[in-house]
Each structure stands twice: as C-alpha cells, then as structure tokens.
Image 1 (spheres, rainbow, N blue to C red):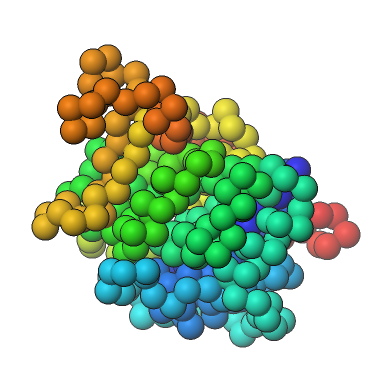
Image 2 (cartoon, protein in one colour; image 1 turned 180 degrees about the horizontal axis):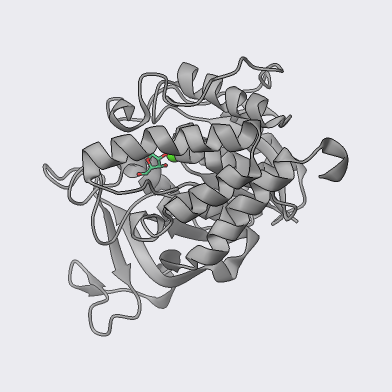
Length: 326
Ligand code: BDR
Ligand code: CA
C-alpha cells in the first residue's frame, strides 16, 4: 500500500485524482490538503468536500494556503469555471474540515509515520509543500516520494514555456525542486497523453450511478473549456496521472534531469528548465558541467494509456459498488 497525501485544488482533473486515490486498493489516502490554484482556497476546499460527498468518501480534508508565496494570485477560472468545478452538481459537505492547517497536517502526518512510508502528491501550486519544508525541514528526509503534477519540457499552457501549477507559484516550485528528496515531475508532456477519450467516457457511462454521472459531468464541462481554449477534442486528466504512477510505476517512463524554475524572465517566468542527463554533451548550466548528483528529478516521458484508463474505470467501479463489496 502506498500511503499518500494528495495536495490539490479541485479542479476537474483534481476531482478524478481524488476518486482514483480513494478507489484504488493499493493507495492509502491519508488526507486531502487544499491549496489556492484553480480557484480561491474557499472554493477549492468546498469542492474537495463535494467530491468526497459525491463519492461517499470520508478522508480528512485540511485547508491550506490562500495565496502563492511571492507571486500575485491567479486562478484558472477560464478552464474550471466560476465555482472551480463547474459542471457536476456540487453536493454539500457531509463532514467537517480537519481543524489543522494543511501545512500542519502534512508535517504532523509525515513526522508521525515511519520514515519513507508517506508520499506527497502535489497537483496544484506547490505552496503548501514549500511551506511544509520551511516549517519542518526534516520532512525532506522522511518523505518517501514526491510526485508532482507540474511543468513541461516541451510546451506550457499559460505561456509558451510555463505550466499552470508552476506559473501560479514559481518560488514554491523552485523550493520543491531544490529540496533533496525523490521527486517525479509529471508535466504536460505526459499528462496530455492521459486523455478522457470517448472510449474511456463510454466505459465510465456503462458503470452508471451517481459517481459515473459526476465524472461524466466533470469531463463534459472541462472538455468544452479545453476545446475552446486549446482546441483539444477531449480533455486531459492531468492530476490523476500522479496517483496512477504511484499505483503502478511501470505506467510511466521517466528520465533523470536537473530541473530549475525560471523566476524572473519577462516571457519565461514559471518555465521549468529541464536539463536531461542523457543528452550527451549538453549537461551544462552557465557553462559549468553538472555533477551526476544534480540529475535527481525523474521527469515523466510517456504513459501507458490503456493501463491508465483501466485504473480510472476500476476505481470508479469500486467506489460505485455497495459498501460491503468494496
Ligand atoms: C494543472 O493545472 C490545473 O488547471 C490542473 O488541475 C492541473 O493540475 C494543469 O496545468
Ligand atoms: Ca490541479
């Protein structure tokens, strides 16, 4: 079992990540922490509780940072709508928020579990994770893995170079990439392969019931904004890829790289500068050859889509089954 904390900003693809984490038997979802990103902290926290209500999930939800560390706040309403999760019916919460701030929740959970047993899965801006590292630096050596949704080595989605989660809080992202822990960067290059195709949507439709309806409404709304904003035929399911990679590491291929976040560029702020180890002769930064130990981020390259789709369908089926059969 992989014990994880899902740090998210639901968000359409965040909602699917929650369902996958809660519905997969290999994941022990210790908690959901929220961070301002796709919308304000009030809205994304309400949405996290609504996803749990729709799916009958009872996992601690802790509210986190309400704005980025340094950079002025920006929200993703142009993709996720006025509520941050437009489309599905947003049910009221069925339980109370965890009383702790997300940063305290992360620190306490990591510090009270055995070393190297808890993984962090940040799929919104990395504000909470950076704050947790600054609050209790010992979490860096205790965390098992950090699997982030963010960045890109080919093309961004907010600017030509910058991906949304990194663009919103670049300083936090740089802090996470500089910490000495095992980080996997699941960027747009990978997540744009994780499409909610017609085939996948039909399989979810065939399950039927409240969760199936919820997921289809999620993809219907975000499918329309992705079509309008980016010309996609069907929407990507970005955030769920990180959970899937922890369930089955063979689902993605990766390559080691030294990753930095551009903090000051007029046109490039928030870009992940990805220096792959295995491009011969190119491993220099400012003219200085990098050491092998600098290449410590695993950057996701390709996805086994059929296996990914099977995991999503399986999780929705399990969550939809009567409680006795889960
Ligand atoms: C990321 O930005 C958000 O809109 C999504 O939830 C995802 O985490 C994709 O760039
Ligand atoms: Ca997200």
